[in-house]
Image (cartoon, rainbow, N blue to C red; front, side):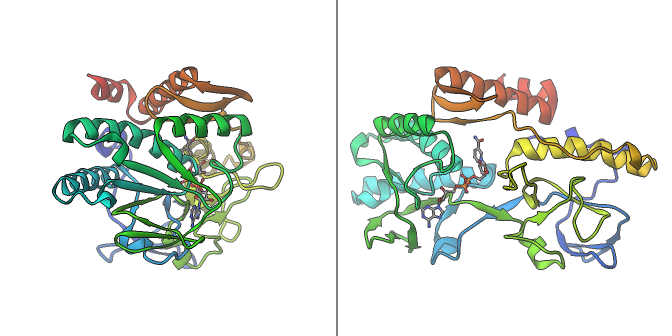
Length: 335
Ligand code: NAD
């Protein structure tokens, strides 16, 4: 984690650390958690995403969601606890971890959990084969929409390491200890980690602005179609590509939007709007880790897999660390 104080120069920015409770676009005001109101001339919304549960019964109440470092720690502690309960009870549902959804988050998580399985089996002296990592996907493929050759590679690689995939089978319900599937199959587990997709922040849906699953369509300058002094970026925004399909909500897109908006807002405030060009996004590629030492990816249309892709993933990790906290963060992370 990067302390905000290291990123934000408080001499230049009046930084307020509070929750936004509401936005009134007509009055141009923001309601904060201490019930105070802020008036704005221009508003930039980058509220991020929330998990999309599709109203699946029991998910909100019982499943785990991988949304930030705190939730990752909660999941880690829960798994440790469940494994220790197995030692007392010998009930196998304590050793079964189900991942709901095989998009990039689900697949990267499966790769990490395989590594964790090996560590915990040694530490707690549990037979490896008793620990189950099951990834369930509603569609008939993992990583829907990604390159077919790389999908096959990822699936074979993870299966070889011990991940079980159940495809073409939506999850319909989760109680505290059972995942119910559409084909009436039931999997007993105390751990369902939901990675079935994301939607925009609920606050946008609750505000008076047109949104689709909490995300707002923007024009070519990242402005709201309804309020031209409101800019929206990151997972809160919908940006269409040349084929009129929305770009997936990735960190890469959000960063490019941030850089663009920084410059275009300065130009707007300096009354040099004529200099502002449209936002154009060229994705550099996608890279997904498959646990320790392996990955898959596409970089400028070149397919990469295995250790080479893993090295590239590590390099992109360093790039992100540098972007977030400079060299200082890289040093803190590794030394
Ligand atoms: P996603 O929407 O990409 O994948 C969710 C998956 O869950 C889909 O395959 C969907 O079919 C499946 N699903 C939905 N309902 C289901 C059900 N009832 N039962 C079983 N499966 C179900 O979501 P994500 O993986 O969280 O990714 C979110 C965004 O973040 C995407 O744009 C993704 O590209 C991006 N991302 C990128 C990386 C990377 O580049 N390495 C890593 C993580 C996420």
